[in-house]
Amino acid sequence: MTSPAARTALELTADLPVPGLEEFYRDLHRHPELSLAEHRTAGRLAERFRGAGYDTAEGVGGTGVVGVLRNGDGPTVLLRADMDALPVAEETGLPYASERDGVMHACGHDLHVTWLAGAARALADGRDAWRGTLLVVGQPAEETGQGAARMVADGLYERFGRPDVLLGQHAAPGPAGLYPHVPGLIMSASTDVDIVVHGRGGHGSRPEATVDPVVTAAHLVTRLQTVVSREIAAGESAVLTVGRIEAGSRHNIIPSTARIALNLRTQSEAVRQRMLAAVRRITRGECLASGCPREPEVTVGTTFPTTVNDAGTDAAVAAVHGEVFGAGTVFDPGPAMGSEDFPELALGSVPYAYWFVTTTPAEVWDGAPGDTLPEKLSAVPSNHSPHFAPDLSTVAPGVRTLVSGALALLSVA
Image (cartoon, rainbow, N blue to C red; front, side, top):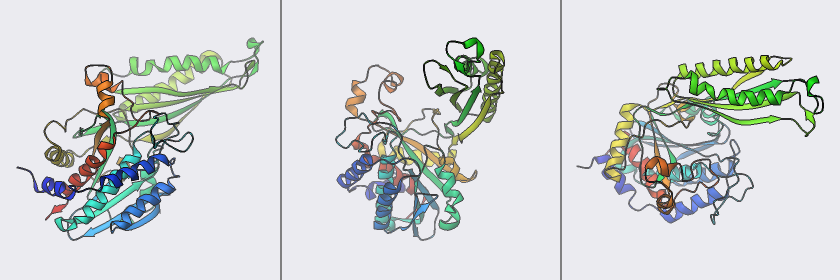
């Protein structure tokens, strides 16, 4: 038998204004904004919140938006969508492609905002069916790991009330119509590391009079790849990526410095610390072997925490999603190596559920090479790709996931 939450969710989302939501999405996609510059996006979302009857505030944590709808005694549930785009030049060829050079919604945050706007309206219009308080949050700067913490530091909970539970979701590659849930660790920690190698510059014709930091950096790039393969146990999950290497200004000049930017992905603090220690040790060793005149600089930068769902909360949301969308649509894919700053909203104690919504268009998925799910996933455009283009057919289901998830935790009349 369908639960009251599932029945109510289907009733409240039966007549969603899908054409209007799709146009809202296209507008957001045409006008992407980078982290902490989401002024237009925030304004558009705030208009939607106000129009639905929420007490709405802008400028929280910079460009964050908060809507509050108090509807009698019951739990306080926070629904969150991130708003920022990426410095990616769009190559989708869509008629509503980005109009801003070098900036694109390549991670689906425009879809997240659309889902939240639709859910906020549906829940407000159906307020006779539930009791409690809704906090709807448009969060800036997820891509840089700053936004959630900035909103909390700006008094998010002191000003608008502390939630009893948090809900969030993310667009992901995969055949549209699936809702992956993990009752525990679902996303990994991410740590940025910057390295500066100090050499001794000089003329390209006289390398013997220099200490070439480019050669040292090249050795470093190769040697750092052994951290995961030779220092992390096979049963652990970890990734080390060299995302950037910079040195020099002209063909015949040996530079004085080289810079390397790393990203580490880990699923436990112990592995993270072991990788950081290895990076420092290998960097010092390579610089010593090269005769560098100064110790290298190793700086730990932006860090995202692991995302660990509260098992009970996630089970409740996953169950209602299974009722709303049908058998086989909800499954446990295991933890992903991607990262999120969503857990910063939990302050270490507020339970939360975070899940994925697959968004690859059917024709793209069916046309991708491969016979297995992993083979096709590696072939279709993923988040951060200049070709990432979610299927508009996921607009209504993404609203329905938030509405049903919220109703699973609110007091349904």
